[in-house]
Length: 125
Image (cartoon, rainbow, N blue to C red):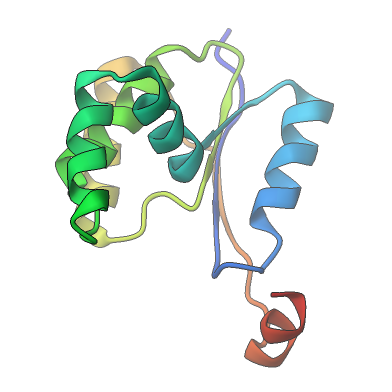
């Protein structure tokens, strides 16, 4: 049976990464962080990693096509549920995620927005 599907959203320093790790450890969900999977793909020298590295080296954002493909790849490796940490960031990414989840037969159970006052985020960072 497919496990829980969660999305954790919020600004840097809001605590979503910390909570994702707790869910991963306590519930056995696979944490998928775009930063982590980008770094991993670059370190391994995959085709997507090479594309990402080219953009990063030029000081550019990694294009949605690359990020979405990496997220899809990571989702295909989950069977006991997942937590998306900070993805999707845009409406277009959300639409593409819907299509990926449908294609893979996975469900999304909840999306949680970490709303933290700017003053608190500044203290944390």
